[in-house]
Length: 268
Image 1 (tube, rainbow, N blue to C red):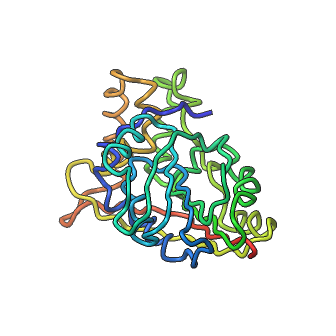
Image 2: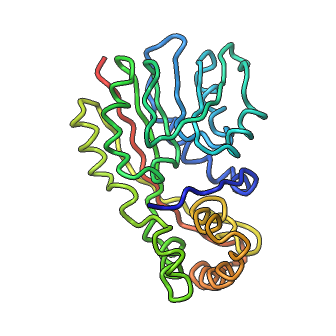
């Protein structure tokens, strides 16, 4: 099982605009919610920067953001918790998606780029769907890029002779998420009306070694956690490989990023 990573909200937010776009696209496909005011759970809320977008869409909602990272929760609590301008409320609480069960009926359970960290996460779907109010929605997006150079090169280096003893079991593999078709089957088998799709974003990143800077905020966290101060030696080799895989252009560095989306609505 991958090491439980230590998160750095500041590093994660360095590419906040690019990271938020899939969440905005996911929200655009969520239908009208049955509750008034609606009750919403954001599972894996991180620093809360996209959780606040839920209050823009549903101003009166009571929204609870859940995360298992003390660093991320501290950032969210400090900057975003409290009443929302539309008369709702935004709260944050500790929870681990591997064991979390809805404590009350929710009109929307949403998860953004979190479930890839949860082994066998699709086995959690029945309990989460059961925790929806009639007519409620479960919506999520996960990265679908585990076979891309950014992740493949990371795994290859981790399995090299220099690092295998310490890192061979640290990283997730390309089975960390299901195929879009498998998600569709799982959700429809649970009696939901499901909409599943995939999108590949072409992020145009700026700065020196921007792909490395991106993954230092997410996929590289388990390695950084395990290696600590020794990480720089790993990063030097990884940086070289990334520069070849993602060459800089006159306009920036193109970083293709595939994502898988699902919106499942429970029968009213």
